[in-house]
Image 1: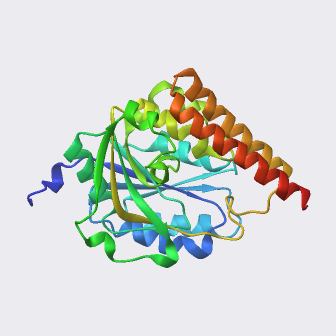
Image 2 (image 1 turned 180 degrees about the vertical axis):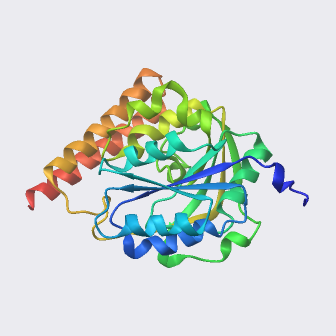
Length: 278
């Protein structure tokens, strides 16, 4: 056993929702399997793929005992995450989108951050896939740890880039499973992270952040975040933002409320202009 005591380290579950990403899935899963943290459980959730991605998931499960597969009808990203969360046995959970890749040290460094600061959530910086660098191997990256209240009071501030997305973080399982969070968001199909990110922070006592880029995302023309604007998409986006603002008003995070209102109004103007062009 080395100085980390690897055989005594907790099980960490990585959930990978999979939908129509056959052409990217091999690279994604390879990066997950290459993690330096050894005590892993990897759950691939095939959310009704019709492009062969589900078959590829089964092939990985046959080759590696750490990999488990869930097949379900298409229900959306959050439902896929929740399916993995329900089956996962880990003390900690991480989420990786199936068209993205992660550094080999993704879990190792986030877990080390949790231990260092006794945190419930650890988050890292992320960059686009095409700008993937070896920079994550350096140890000269800024770190900060905040209480849940401190994080929510500065929401959309200096650490805005770390906040909303779910896939740049390692969570203690209690953060994800408290307050009926799984059931509440099971059928959410769009803008899931906008709806849930602040609630996860509320469930944590401390959140640790590192500027080290450990997650590399891919922008795709047909991805949910870059698809052509539509009235339905606009309405769902604005609804998710309003739900988030209701939380901040209810809990009297007034400075954060002001920032969120500004962003909401800018989105309304932007969407109005885009819809006029349709």
